Length: 132
Image (tube, rainbow, N blue to C red; front, side):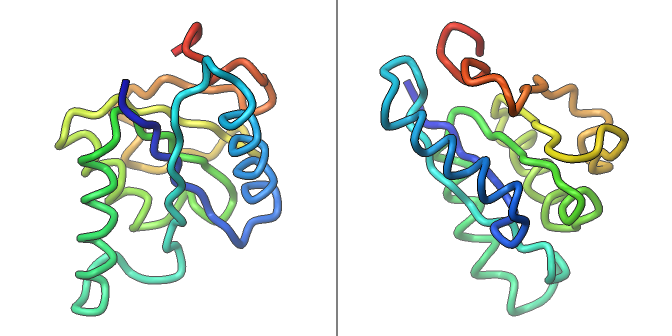
């Protein structure tokens, strides 16, 4: 079984708490997928010479993962980087998962047509192998 790549915003306290919770659950539960975390770069535009290396690293992580979980918070839903990550996951035919942390009415534009599997971030079993 491949790993689950979790893309989150480390500067958002709720997203950071969710990341720590997922890390603990993955370590403590045999039926959780192996996880790897990728910090979203919401404060930079997605294009430019400086961003090439970040894109290469993110693309490598996405290629290696079986599933991608996009953690959506107030800081990430309008991010060019998040839209790029979603488009890259779709291009590599990865299973796309999404979790909204703090606002039910916000969605990155790239997710609108992507038909992700929505995860309840407050359900401890939502990412267990029995559910996804």
